[in-house]
Structures are given as C-alpha cells and as structure tokens.
Length: 90
Image 1 (spheres, rainbow, N blue to C red):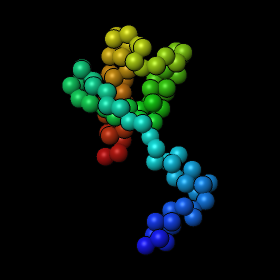
Image 2: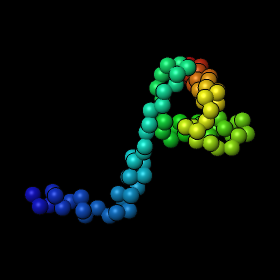
Image 3: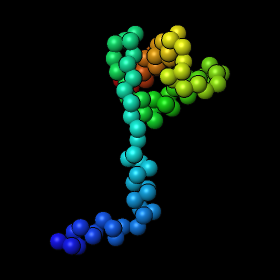
Image 4: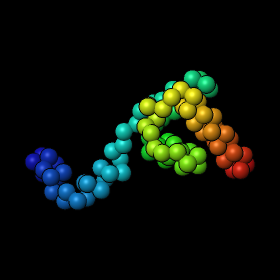
C-alpha cells in the first residue's frame, strides 16, 4: 500500500510539468447574444480572436474590454469563418 501512495512522487518533475502545460487550460464560457449561443473561450478562441484583430490591423485589446459593436463584429466574423470552413470540409 505504501508503494501505491509513493508512486506518484517517484515521477520526475519535468515529466509532470510537460503534462500540466498541455492539460491545464482555463476555459470560460462566453455568450454570443446575436446568435444566442455559448462559446468556450479557450486557446483556440483566443487564437481566432487574435487572427481577427490582425486581419483588421488592430492592436490587441482584451475581448472583455471591447465595445459592444466590436464584439458583435467579431462574432459575425467568427460565424462566417466557421461556415466557410464547414463548407470546404464537405
């Protein structure tokens, strides 16, 4: 029984650190009032948001601090982009 409890302590910390980087993500749900759906705000959504800003040559501003008109424009762009990629996959 002691070995089963002590086994996790025998793993090198570098191996554990690698696992934490991949699995430890903060995910928040964001409501899109224009399409009335929720989106998980994770690294993928963050990457899409940064691509949206880069495409429009805008400086990075956190999504929560954007004006409502800018948020609406982002979600419109996001849904159009999803629909384009879904169409290409068929």
